[in-house]
Length: 280
Image (cartoon, rainbow, N blue to C red; front, top):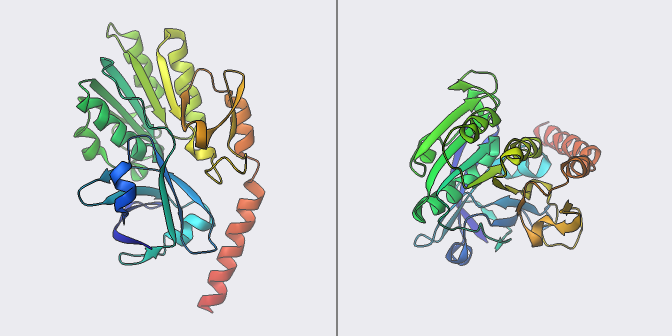
């Protein structure tokens, strides 16, 4: 069993958990993910590692409560235990000394870019971070991100906090400047990652995206995370989760993400009905 040591509410729909998992923490690297189950018969939930502490033996995950399983996870508190917590899984981020790099995080994607920024900075890169959310209430970890970047640009879609702009706007400005950008990472909603890749493509700057959000089983067994990369079929969980954003077939990926919408809606309705019956 994996104990929740700390729980924190980051936004109205986003929670942070620090999990006691020494074996996972010992091997964890930036870019990898874990799979957890709330109870023995629970759904497998793949989540990118947001932070790790080898000495303390802990893994930090950040979860947005969207479906029935993540809402159920949200009911757990400090001291409660998870049925399983498997990892680290996936190929780690390729960390090298590139020079000046830009790392873009949108919404929940701010969590997984944190360890990537830290690792890139430790490798001697000049790290420019761009973080954004739909509104100020959904933005988190600004202070933490300032600690692992040399420059940080903060945006909100509606202008309710910091600069009013999509994250691709300052990204394009940086690419159009006289600064030499060696590589870009973009993590967030699939549509955001698509436009990050489209923004960098004309400039020929290598762009890495993380496709964790399309995973279901997380082991390659279900095939739900099939993606077309460079014209070849890849599995986000075992071949990724990071891929060259310029080679991803984004239209196919976005279509595949909609496959389970009806089932997800049914699961939420069943969960809410269960809660109502318990409360009555």
